Each structure stands twice: as C-alpha cells, then as structure tokens.
Image 1 (cartoon, rainbow, N blue to C red):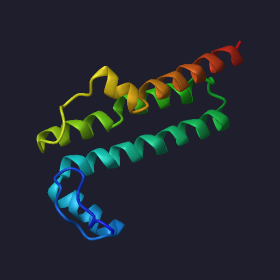
Image 2: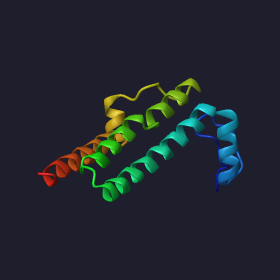
Image 3: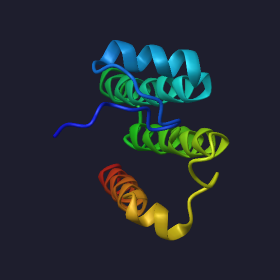
Length: 122
C-alpha cells in the first residue's frame, strides 16, 4: 500500500513529482527553499574552486577550504531551524543527532582532505 506524498516540513499532502514539491517548498516554506538553493550553490562553488585551482595553479588547500566553508554555510542547520519554526524539530541538533546524521563523518573527511592537501604541498 503506497502512502500519498507529504511535505516533510509541514505534513501537507502534495502531488508526486519534483515540480509540485518545489512549488510547495517555494510558496509555503520560502526559508527552506532559499536554504536548498544555497546548499546547491555551495556545491557548485566547491567545483568552481577545484577547477580554478587546476587552471590557475592555486595552492592545494583552496578546494578543501572552500568545501569546509560550504559545509559551514551548509543549510542543514538552516533547514533544522526552518523545521523548528514549523514545530517539527528543535532548532539545533544535539551532538548525538549530529553524529547520527553523518556530521562527524563529513568533518573527518574534510579534515583528511586538508591534511592530505597540506602534505602534498610540502
């Protein structure tokens, strides 16, 4: 038995498909829509920094620093704040929630990339 799709933020039923979901997000949750676009832009910024590093010969630590900056700006935290406004979650995750959500793994990968970049530059 399939369940009708519903908004994860407010629980409102929405049509299946990406266009109705994005329309609902933009119309009913503008903060979450803005957060989604910022998260996508941060990914593209990282790719641009990686390409610029290759083309212009910038130091190897530039893309990992950009990745870290993107993660800091990442809207996963912003999305939680928006969800909290809708009454669904607490504004900030606890350390346990952060670890369960893979946050510590992401930080470990970023630190590993930074260490490898620093070792490669010597």
